[in-house]
Length: 85
Picture 1 (cartoon, rainbow, N blue to C red):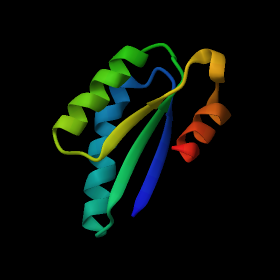
Picture 2 (cartoon, helix red, strand yellow; picture 1 turned 180 degrees about the vertical axis):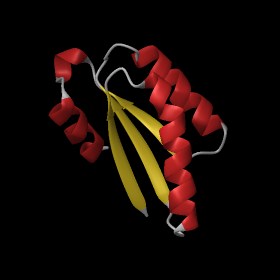
Picture 3 (cartoon, rainbow, N blue to C red; picture 1 turned 30 degrees about the horizontal axis):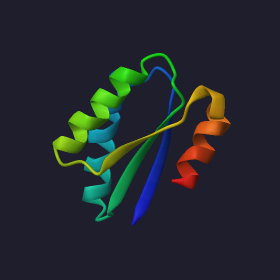
């Protein structure tokens, strides 16, 4: 199994296209994949959560890991959050 961690900063419009392309490629390669979107209350966090919920309901193995701003911010924080999940 492969886990892909994607930090998100105001990326809501890109979540669905990224998810669809990632799963199309990994299915073609015969890989079992989990997509983890790591978010730290960036602008668009509510929409990102909505996109992830919609994609999960469609059967994609995708989930959102959120961190409060007070717990850390930025790219490195989001990557570490994803690795910890």
